[in-house]
Image 1 (tube, helix red, strand yellow):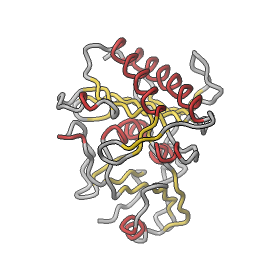
Image 2 (cartoon, helix red, strand yellow):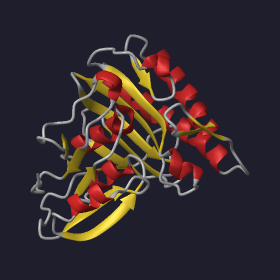
Image 3 (cartoon, helix red, strand yellow):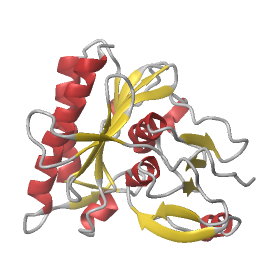
Image 4 (tube, helix red, strand yellow):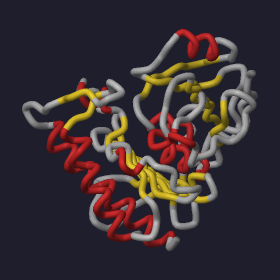
Length: 264
């Protein structure tokens, strides 16, 4: 894989998809329907998906593509692929809360090596450099990359008082019970893959997810967190979260800064 070109294309497509999403988001109304798994999908999901899929297939025709909105791409393709969630946080989008993202990632050997997370309504853009380090680009965002800053996890989290981020739309008692096992100085909620990015920037130390997610939900944020020095592990056994699993469904997981002392 040509990582220079990959970085350029992922950034370009994420911004273009974000612009299309915002056109619909800021419009007077948009249609929402339920998919077969009862999750919502909108015209913004489908428009962003078409744009990103076309661009990735043109740029990287030899690399398998998996995208949430195209069921035909969900067959097993091995351990190296591109994976896309064109609009992560559709519930946040529908409720006009702004915590939604465009996610594009490249997985090799079952690991998310490169990724981009763009939150168009928040004006935040995170991606990995060709060398694999995580950055946040400072807007406004143009055709050429603007100023960026390297991001990194909190190097010395205080286990007596951690900053924890949890899901905004999928918070449950099991998650609250798990968080209660830590010393917590602050708890914030966020939607979509922004939770990974908050850990990656040091704005949070710990993100536990005790609920259903798919690999397209997590791969881009996982890549950015890894590029910022963080970790994402299975809830059971604390082994690194892997990609290319049958059906692309994740187990429960924990994303964190390495200084956090994980609970069983």
